[in-house]
Amino acid sequence: MQRGERTLTRETALIEALSRRFGPAPPGVVLGIGDDCAALSTNGDDYLLWTVDTLVERVHFDLSYTTLTQLGWKALAVNLSDIAAMGGEPRYALLSLGWPPERDPGLALELADGLAQAGREYGVAIIGGDTVASPGQLTVTITLTGVVPARQLLKRAGARAGDLIYVTDDLGEAAAGLEVLKRRPELDADLKAALVAAHLAPRPQLKAGRLLAREGLATAAIDTSDGVASDLYHICQASGVGAVIPAAAVPISPRVLAVAPYLQADPLKLALMGGEDYQLLFTATRDMAARLAPAFAGAGLDPPLLLGEIVAGDRVSLVTGGGEVDISGAGFDHFRLDLEPEEI
Ligand SMILES: [Mg+2]
Image 1 (cartoon, protein in one colour):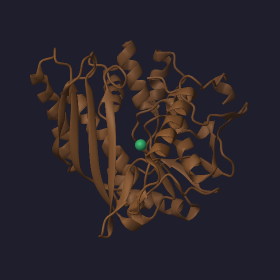
Image 2 (cartoon, rainbow, N blue to C red):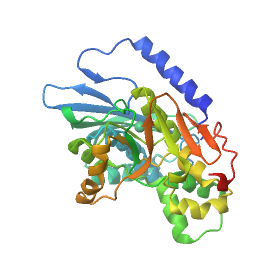
Image 3 (spheres, helix red, strand yellow):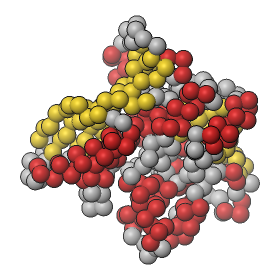
Image 4 (cartoon, rainbow, N blue to C red):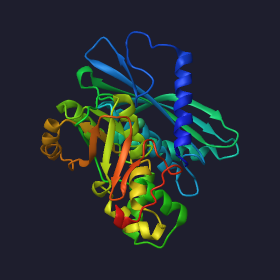
């Protein structure tokens, strides 16, 4: 998938144009277009979260290296990740399946198996949907609801200069896994299996999202779907701030460092521009930051990893030995870090 700045800008412009057509959100809509989920005020103490995601064959997945069961898991997982980014608990899902008529409809049951597996794992019931003939590609659309106590809602807006930026795991494995699937390098079997699993079977960070929300440990949050440079830029835009990431401190997965030479890839690029890790990226005041490690340990989770700091401004900057590079919204196309590793 190409996630260049041009793509991001075009997508952002389209979303803005569409939302103008739809007009302002009516009362009761706490969060409309522009966050990981919409949030609606119900009459109780909870907000209703509502999200939708579509996976399109040859854009988001390739059945030459993804089984339908894996696809079913991932289709729900990517939606669950958006609920996690709001601090919510998932509830109910609807499935809309676009199925090419020439394919055996019995195979759709394998996809349903993967969906059902993820549903059981994360406590989601799939309660309806639609199936249509799709001339060409297979498409899977999931609509998912969730709930979050009103006062605990996590949003992209809320980061302030001086906040620290964290991620819930080290970075780049899903992007490296995709390259491994495409290029099939000769690799250690365990390394290969771990990277491929990171790409095909992401684990949405619902527990971490609930913890951050419940304990008031984050000022803003998003899930890492497009790549950290893009996802962090979304937080910056929503919050009206900038961010600084010291290149030497980026928590690159050791597996990504190990596989990078086999892929002739820059591990820093995989970590910052590679998407689909489906971790949480969040900001915290220094007081909150001091409470993160014990709170995560108490919940049986690994401590979040420091990525950088929120600053005044409106750009995401990567600080290297060679100077600062603007990586705001950068994807594979746009990102040009023409620096030797020793300069970083
Ligand atoms: Mg998201």
